[in-house]
Length: 410
Ligand code: PMP
Image 1 (cartoon, rainbow, N blue to C red):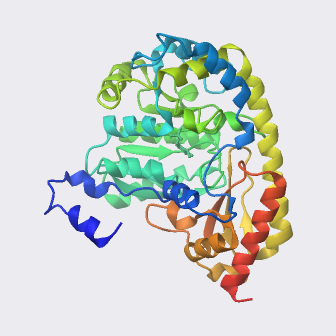
Image 2: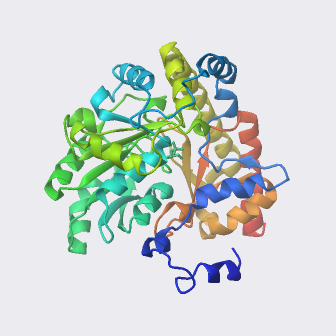
């Protein structure tokens, strides 16, 4: 944006809403545009995109032929197409995150679910607890409603819930919401333990704060055993607002997701969604519904889990090979991401600068500060292991090593 553009956007020049000043944008999404404009060969570890070859395109094309007909291109019900609601609820009944027809509203991806949660619960000035690091598109949604964010630490068992009472007490306020990504957290890969889930539910009730439970990766567990969702641990709890999406388990371009709330909240969710977009993309919903109805989601997910487990292990092996003791790495049991922390002589490198050097060397990642509301973690970075083949990943990690060497001047 040029200085001239900014001048046009100043409140003196235009009658902007106060909230326009809170629309901070997304470094993660901007990296997609930046990379799309770059002509040289870049290994892409930046976006949390499923592997392109993992999208069952031939089958979706065939299903599209069957579902595109008169009647499927008109407005649909705001809560979602009945075929999708039915097949989705049926599918989820066999998982660690079961639901019921009167709880689900179909959304335009997980982002709209987060927007609905914030629209319903957050007033300007409200305190919202977020993980540190976190998926900053989610925290930016809370900011867009005027929230004040309180960053809380994470460890290998997820959000350090035991630390919250003291952190909150220091603010002298009561939080209105806790934004958590309980499974294979974006970006750390950590999973919230059962004990901490229970404690978080207790705290949410003590504070009368909503848990915004953002879980796009829960169905992508490739190691270990499932931990019950908040909703499964606290059935009928209106303080649990769950946000889900098909973006990681089928295809992000479809923009189909869902929210799972207590039935008492559902009409409010529907009203809020009506004020946004009336209904979610109808043909996309029919595509997903038919894919599930044919019984394909289970086998598709089984294939993804094997592929992503192999890709995680391949990336870890490449990291050991090329980066040796210059980094420490997390070891997630599912999802898409490894979180690397620079150490030894590399600890002095700024990953914001390394990002630029990495692009010049032909590798893209998300620098740590882009994943913290306060810009922390300049010694860390996020890598997506899901998108690239093991061979391509090895090349990307080799390029990352070259970028680190350039920064170290060696
Ligand atoms: N939450 C988290 C934690 C995510 O990682 C993502 C996608 N990167 C989303 C929400 C957004 O999902 P969608 O693309 O379906 O809007």
